[in-house]
Length: 218
Image (tube, rainbow, N blue to C red; front, side, top):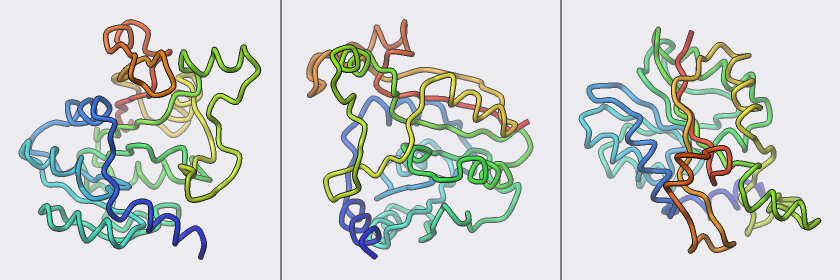
């Protein structure tokens, strides 16, 4: 019950501020496709994808978020993605998992469920915080916590696992996805992210703030 209340309070009206990551997700989607946004929140990303000429569906645990998503013309349902994805198999051209995989307990079961919902050759776009960012590496060298959560409270993001490029690639390969694109959004040089470089993130994506991957179902 505590978890449900925290999630509802956090995500019912949540507007993500990471503009660069969102732009990358939208760029990686096509047009004329049927796309599911998992953890759709208030539909900010879904609306941008819909405006490209796609039919967009969404699921989220927050009832308030789903109400806001539907106002944007997105077909949205309340669902617990840890248990099921309430759509037909082989239905979607693409599925968006933006900042989702780090919240999942059984990642293999979850990705297999995702895979079933994709048509042949369909794709998944995953973004997740990078454990091996430039800043986190420095913090570890200094013996400090590299922004890894050790509690679940109202001020936490609820992450239960963290990824680097290799571990995410291995997880996707184990679940029969082939990596098509790998990139990042920006490299931050201070805690607030006011000093950053998008150019260096293109050259050294393994040091970037986010891991962004597009992978095909095989």
